[in-house]
Image (cartoon, rainbow, N blue to C red):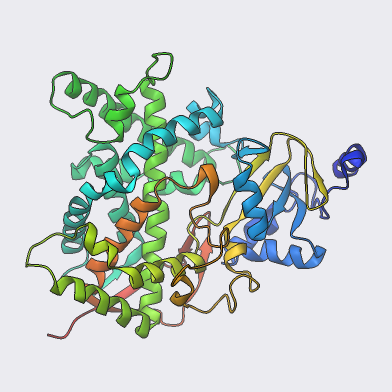
Length: 461
């Protein structure tokens, strides 16, 4: 009924997109979630695009009236109109996990944070961290992988990316402190898109509690850093945490400790989860496809031969890893770490002849773009050559989003993924312990159903 009223009021601006409201209150949320739980989040979008013969359709998700814009044209429209016609939007429960997000507009906060991040995550700044990443990866593989016959990849990949994020964002290196931060993170990450029912035992309730635990630990780190900066024991430029503490806005105001803790918390989630998913699925596909493994191995061995024993990887080495990065990109196309995100219409507008009212939520699906056979022929086939030369057309390969809200950590992710691949293949061949198990679920990111147990096979000498 709500849509019928909306359609009547929208008549002057044109018809609403075709679609279905689904069940009362729930809408089509269960269909949306079910597609992810079955490992095919793109089906929710592609099935409806086919059903309505339209690349834009309306639905009802996470308790909100929504339109889904699909394909390269939908991606381009949303990315190009950021903060003009649309802005980022998260389900209402997110405020309970990140309370500081309610204190100022997401647009203002996003601009400030991205400005800070750009200083530390641009390519020129990241170059000086490559040696540090390499040494941390060396230690990670020595402690977590070597002298073992079998490992489960996903938790190890999370350890690797989380330790890097802690070290590079907040200079946290103490293993016990990293462990105290890490333990609540699984609960926290899985609660971000959970149904926002704050009752004991629900994923959402567990996520709120986990966020409080992590935030308290971060607040103690922040308080100590302020002391260390005042006493000259810490550098103003050593990491993002120092920069946040010492940078004021245009009115001379500094960020509150609670807000800094929230921002660092968000960065640690982003720094851990997306890259760990990519690293895990890289192992999966290398195990399944020996010819792809051989291509990566040969490239990495050529780089290793050019270096003296004990030398760390450097910028020039990473630039040579072209085939390895093509493989990583094809992995992220097939198992996109962030399947899609929401926006909100901040003004009435028309798109492809349909009227989108102010306040409508908008969903764009990276996975539906990546699995669209009109964009990527034989979309289920693993083919790194898609990324040779100029690569895919604009707005078709979007694992990092696009426009003003494109993930500022793209280069950071590229570096940590390539360093991971280098240390992995130079040490081991490997095989899946459940050979025919290709199952993965999306909740809210893709993860192998059993965490990807593998058997490690050292290289023949």
